[in-house]
Image 1 (cartoon, rainbow, N blue to C red):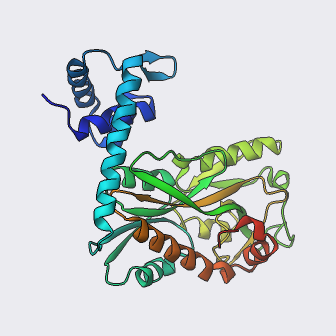
Image 2 (cartoon, rainbow, N blue to C red; image 1 turned 90 degrees about the vertical axis):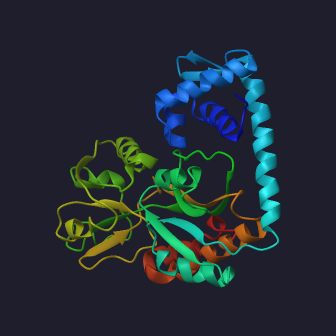
Image 3 (cartoon, rainbow, N blue to C red; image 1 turned 120 degrees about the horizontal axis):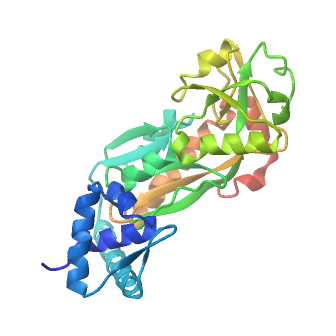
Length: 317
């Protein structure tokens, strides 16, 4: 058996994730199949590539050499196909986006930047799901949100560029809530409230909620689990409160307020596969997503006020 590209991607995935099981999941293989392929590669190169450690698996000295050379080969391959696409790209664009207000304009704005190219859109509540879609080739590019301290790792051929380096997370309350009339809300004053879990909790949003509440002196009572948007009736009825992306206008019967001291912040990044998009095409997607986001800044007056008061938080736009 000779080494091929899937073997190179496999050893890089194991090195990146520190786990044969996680690497198998990333590449869409079963753990036994991944282990079997690894053993075959080790037989070809003449030695063990990974050893178990307290944190999972890590490369041996030989493994580090193989991984380093594999990355060079894969990077060159990505560059080769990216250059070939510079002559013109007409294939459909598989685009992903987290559940932001700007999803309403994403297709139109990106289409204006990439005329003649069909665009499909997949909306997910979690950056992890979008990252998996990119890693497995189901997506070409995506607009992703990442909670500070909980970045979602990306590996070649996926690359990223920051769109919004920092924005706060707000809280949604019933319009009849005792704190609804305040301009901003101290997180500590929400002790004893029932909480709706953030959608896409696997990307760190639920862990971040718990950490922020603990720092404010209490453990949140996470009572409800609802997909993006589905928790709005619960908030309006006064059954719970929830953290929200600030770009959405307040739903009927609710108010959206900043949290004092910004205990939670996030950033927006554009990610894409270099083997699918040329440099020019990636720049066009970035411009389209930026325009779509700006189109909806004024949707929520509270966020609009924050946006205009903090130009340093969005220098690229």
